Length: 168
Ligand SMILES: [Zn+2]
Image 1 (tube, helix red, strand yellow):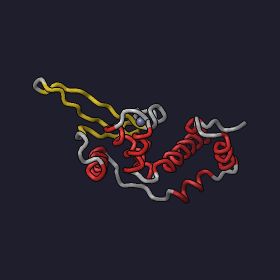
Image 2: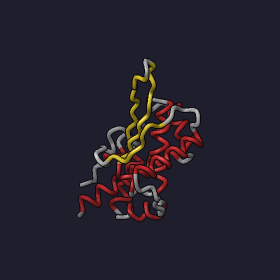
Image 3: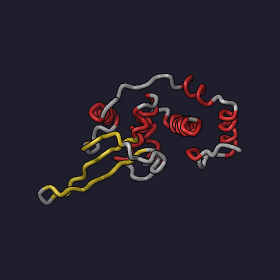
């Protein structure tokens, strides 16, 4: 029986075959550990806010300010490509002002550093682009150069976590 690759829906069959080979050969954990050995030190919501804010200052200085950035333990990771971003319109003295809230699934607290960078880039890019279109992904790559490889490997990482859970 082959492992369902829930996080890799939409990738071409030859890619999925390679992933299955990694899994069936018991080499997925090793692959991830080798490529992504470094954890990060962004442990709480305050640190997460600073981390995302610093990224925004560097790459999206003129975009509207972030109201809130938090780890969310209830967030379903696959649901909206791994995080959520909400634009909340508030009425300030008759003028509509958009404020931005970013929630990052708490699985990223313990994930390797590059995956946190990737998901933060994804959410920040949504400040400018609501949809997952060409301009959106160009922005993701502007913030995190290796974005596409990271997104793919993040999906492998989530597959690995599910497997660990199933085996224990
Ligand atoms: Zn998205």
